[in-house]
Image (cartoon, rainbow, N blue to C red; front, side, top):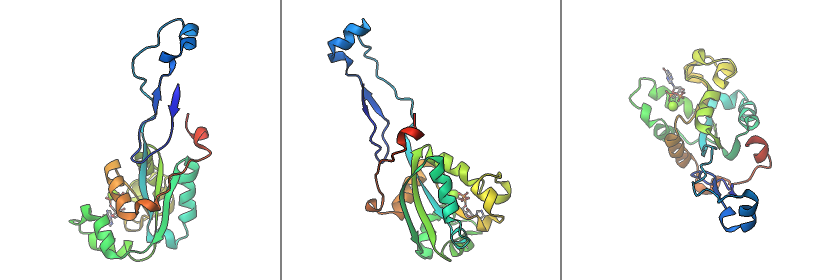
Length: 194
Ligand code: IDP
Ligand code: MG
């Protein structure tokens, strides 16, 4: 088998190509002709998610603690920066909530201090990231989740995480230039993935 494991963005499934067809020794040992059926990899596609520690999380010194959770989970950090872009950026970021009564306050809160912007990569990173964050309202968040452990009010819920692959792609493009994202191979890859 020839195994292609380079992780690309947007992520591609791992493709295995049989080399046995052209190898008479493999054919002799097996004793039967290799199947022509395509090999379907069982590993789901890798994803990237946009995670942002909001101004309250930054002010309260939670950057290290929150990053540690994603890092020790096994996700790979591919982009990170501190930013304080102003209200217009958050109006774009939260555009889908512009009709909500809390929108103005949300934008003011988000723009009130630096935010820590991150892109984390891994299998099911979007859905898993949401589980790690917990529910939007900290009261509904389970202990063990970030919001469940570190906050009380919905208007000060310390962290943002993309809610779908589509919005992750949109948010990553909004917050990061392509050259700010780093494609690198983690030495732990084979200790995190089967
Ligand atoms: P999410 O952050 O869990 O995706 P959204 O519904 O997308 O939740 O809302 C975005 C952010 O808006 C929340 O994280 C929270 O900071 C704020 N928010 C949501 N609902 C309320 C509310 O009822 N009052 C005040 N702020 C809210
Ligand atoms: Mg949301």
